[in-house]
Amino acid sequence: MEARLVSYQDIGVEVRHFVFEAPGADALPALPGQFVSFTGEVGGRRVTRPYSLAGLPQGNRFELCLNRVKEGLFSPWLFELEPGQTVAMQGPLGYFTPRQPFRDSVLVATGTGVAPFRAFLQSEAVLASGARITLLFGARQEESLLYRAEFEQLERIRPGFRYMPTLTRPPEGWQGRTGRVQAHLDEALEGRADLDVYLCGMREMVDDIRRLLKERGFERRQIIAEKYD
Ligand SMILES: Cc1cc2nc3c(=O)[nH]c(=O)nc-3n(C[C@H](O)[C@H](O)[C@H](O)COP(=O)(O)OP(=O)(O)OC[C@H]3O[C@@H](n4cnc5c(N)ncnc54)[C@H](O)[C@@H]3O)c2cc1C
Image (tube, rainbow, N blue to C red; front, side, top):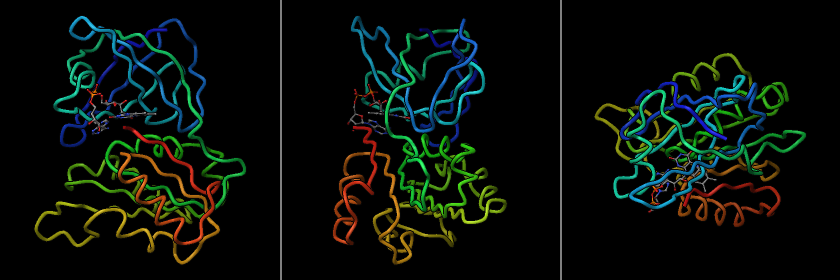
């Protein structure tokens, strides 16, 4: 399958939101949390990388949220793409999807790890579940609070949804949480150990939070994780 770039927008420091379409397909059947796998020729090498869908596809259109890894191979190449250009694609794939039935949950993300949670939070099955949902999201700077306005809006209109952003490099005058997500896990858990916890981001954060959860009595099946590295 092919993906054709429709448009893009810079939404954080070195973070870009992309809209692609799959020409020839009427729809792209995907579960929230799934990813697509892109393949390109970079410097004479065939390179494949997975990217979480940053929302539920609409027809054959879908969104991604990408970090440009400075020393990386494939992500800088994707940042060179212009609308109309195409890339080889497989998917959607993956099992990092909301459990059925969806229970009270804490979603923990850092950086572009928030992408699959944007898809979770567009899902009717998740939103209509009545579950209490906390999104604990860590970013470096305020400009990198990806999709902030959407999550703040959801907090206003969807009872039981809580948005907990935290910054490791807060600007002067920032009144919100600071430091890493690890420091705010207990606030997110509200003293409960009967929740499902979904983790998405870099290995270090995922492993750290998993260890903290185990110390708090969480069982393996309550921890659902996607590691980006
Ligand atoms: C299931 C899955 C879903 C993914 N979804 C996304 C996504 O939605 N958005 C996204 O930006 N990346 C995502 N990634 C990471 C992505 O596949 C690539 O690893 C990333 O783009 C770097 O590739 P590269 O060729 O540029 O760097 P490489 O040359 O492969 O260098 C890898 C380096 O990049 C670091 N790295 C990997 N991902 C990130 C990241 N997101 N932010 C900062 N550093 C990173 C690694 O720690 C490593 O040091 C996902 C990975 C997996 C396994």
